Length: 154
Image (cartoon, rainbow, N blue to C red; front, side, top):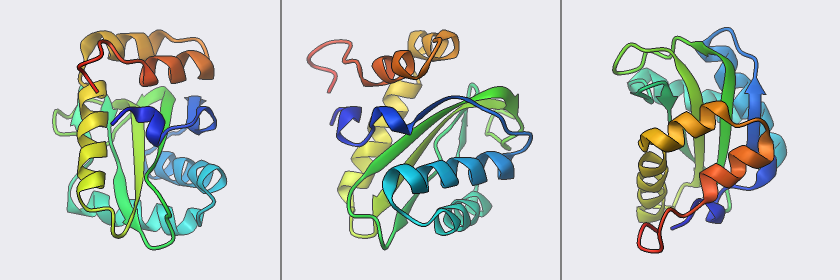
């Protein structure tokens, strides 16, 4: 499952300004609402509820907030690179600067898990992480996120 199945260029934010985890989630939810045609408040509330279960900060400056939404018609993603790292209560206690939001329909089931696994694979590659932090703009970030290192990796 390539990321192009659920990530579009308009859903890539190269320099999101946020001073806190809540502000980052709110701003990401608002932008996701615009790009995905969903309710931003609903996304934000669901993300906060998910974070109460445990941080989606997976370590090395990366967070993958996610949730299932009744009004979502398909899997959709949004990537944000934060202008400055913030405390995200990550597993390794390191601040987060790379956030990949995954929105799934309530009945997504295995597709949601496959998409999460794909995002995690892309986001755990050290060269990709370094490149994402150094990329200049939205199109460069999108290209990095959606490239296929080799034909067997999809």
